[in-house]
Figure (cartoon, rainbow, N blue to C red):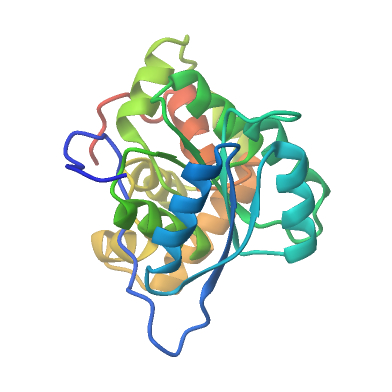
Length: 240
């Protein structure tokens, strides 16, 4: 969880640093390795604006702790006993009335894990080898309603699967501006960055993003981007 973060292929949308008076983001950490879990707790609890409220040693406990503690975010390991992190994420997001955001964390940069995490509804995917400040930023990003996008991983993922065509999207009846917003979302831009790029207000962007998610039936921004890639609206390597 230290060292250089260059070349990780992870794009974090820019968000404002948490103000001193802002409520702290509450976090549950789920990891079956006690040393890793304790280390993450100590390091993340020292980050501004984050309060670790609980831990879990397996997927079953992760769901139980999240349901009882109602954190803003769950940092969910993939490989855990009793229930893996992907299945725990799927269960938690399906059963909770007001589910937390989930950031999946793992040792391995595995495209299968990325695909499974997105399909389960996770809002982000980070590697344990990242510096703790990057993991903390991912927690803040998803807590703010954004998503931690991985253009490189998404590009590899969809390149290995047969793409459809943009005609798959008309069923969603996206407007031209909504398609434009979706393309910018696919580059990892945050709402403020999209607003600046299109020279529109932040509220207008939020409205467009909400419409895109609703029309596509997407669970979150990342899911919407996957749909954009798979439909052919966005192709691997697209940069806006």
